[in-house]
Image 1 (cartoon, rainbow, N blue to C red):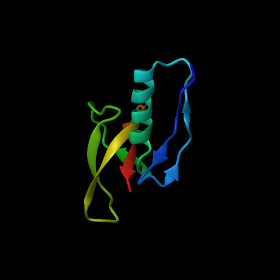
Image 2: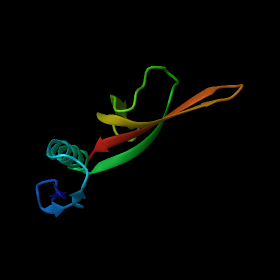
Image 3: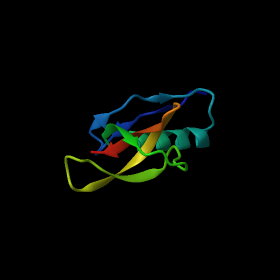
Image 4: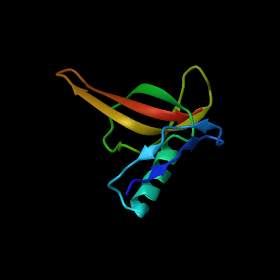
Length: 100
């Protein structure tokens, strides 16, 4: 059996790539479709930010950050964590997704 889920993004006007999964059951297809639509429902700004090393950041965590060029803080989801250790310092960079 082959099931195709049609995907529409945002307010329903932007058509997305259909999801075609011939080996998944109906419930799995529905959950996959919902996850894909949620992940692509909004446009995101990709931000890379250097931060002071602090253990405890997790992928998927929502953080509050401040852009030095603007005074207002914003919330974003952590999508990547990079830690570099040298003899002199521990550097940490976060990749964030901020909804537009």
